[in-house]
Length: 338
Ligand code: DAH
Image (tube, rainbow, N blue to C red; front, top):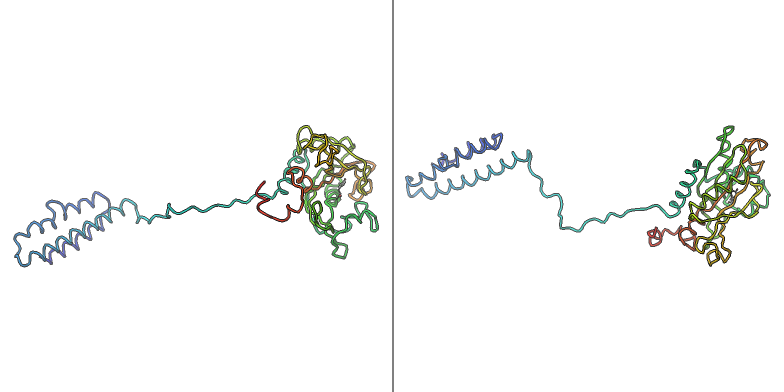
């Protein structure tokens, strides 16, 4: 009897493993465990077995029945899934991961806003190196060695005629050289600049500027005023006015400092504008003939305007920040506000 059970077990196991679908599996189940199945038959016939051996045979038959039921269930699962089912991939009751999101630095955002306004007016974005030659940084911009204007832009010299650029203006020369003899030259040049300054609320040895240059036939101060007026309205709001005050830069003639009407008091006078109603935001002027010539253009035939603004200054005005140093401290409590 026991031997018979063991052979039944082997045969059933093979048939279960070989079943190709649920229907075949069900046939196997019925053949062994159904009402008239082979294993069931053994259990039914227990009454005819010698009473001494009955418990042993009965137990073996029951164990086989349970084993076969387990094998059937496993095979049924495999056939359903195509492959063994993986365990739960993660514990849904655990607290989730916080995904920390980075963001653009406020100076970068202001720079991109400025770029967007000038791109809209047909300017392209140009770049120049931060390690610049004294020729591009000073000489070509009509600031020869010994020129007193160099004093205000003392910088970090490498020797051999190289310097950390003190302004984005050298990109004017580089852009003209690249474009010449075609017209127009119509670029803005944002970037980092360096000066030998002690850091305080309004100074930093590293800061950022955006240069602008438009060279073409027949460019006048009216074009400069129009472009900067549009820029000021887009940057600081529809009602913003600008004014030009005479000034001096070696690379422009005439030169001007450009103010915008104070957005905080609408020009009536407040603490931010020191009661004047105006805020200085940039320097500008008509490109000096020597600068045009250094760029390869004939000053008798073409003219141009240029301007340069400090990004920190614009950012402080736009964001209501009164100390420039916070832009460089990378304190998240500050940065996360924007
Ligand atoms: N480069 C000047 C500075 O750093 C700013 C400037 C003034 C740029 C007048 C210009 C300009 O292009 O026309 O102080």
